[in-house]
Image 1 (tube, rainbow, N blue to C red):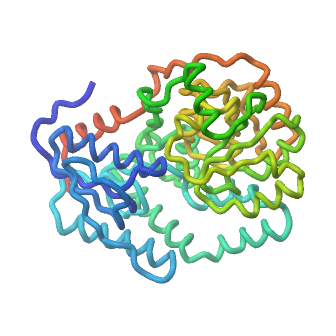
Image 2: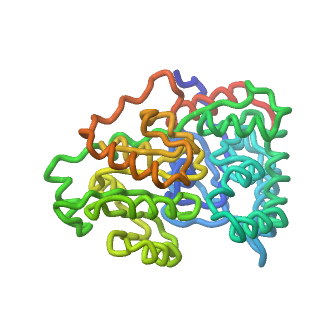
Length: 381
């Protein structure tokens, strides 16, 4: 049940970008909008505004200055702290690399743990060594790690977006009391992400130039290396010619197009760039594969499932919890196993979207309850 707080409160939501593109950004936008709709006085402390502002939300733009990333990260953390100290907020909700907040939502992973887990996305040899070396000496990495340590010590409540992330947080910060770290999962918008009728599906496939006999393997993400596009291309090379790979994500695919050419599958791959209509993208697919080497809680997996897509996921993804265990693969680098699983799941009939488990905290509701509880037991920031 949601709390009974009636008095209007001054709340700050802190996130570097005010926009809806991206999982964390979209969540922050919806949270700010929901808090304003409940009658609270909401400031959104950000470095920049990328699109329309939610009704009732006031942006406080502090910029993100400096020639280097570590300066930009530090600037935003200090500027956000300055704004908080200049105002008398009843509650601060932090969603980025910020120092002080009542509630800290962790949508990723402590950077040192992330670096260790994700380094396997780079090929063995010089490429992996160079990436590891650059991370080890990165001033931005050291800055983020320091801010993260302060954030964990100062936050009243820490919220992880999956059990997978919670385990990583407690691993990186063993001094944290386990009960201080809650888990609230992302939840797909069931009003938008719904299965298509046969006619709608054919329209979606036609709009993307998909042939009637094509078997579409889809994936989505912006960091193509981390999302396992390389192993997916190698898996594609082992699949029959009618299998095609469609990728949504606004990064330069040049390196992966070269790999596709080397593997002889260039004509079977389509990089769509940034896709605004992800519902149609999922509906056009036969199989959605998340081959990520690290994903806190992939929204794409949940959304694809809600659209009635067959789904495969790497075990290094927090939302793999909601995928049938026989279609969760332990090693995203094992492209041969991935190819076998793609063929196996494609042969199965499309299942109805799974019911969302009632016993799991998810979506915006638990966050609004948490805010109410903090306001009812108010303490100074």
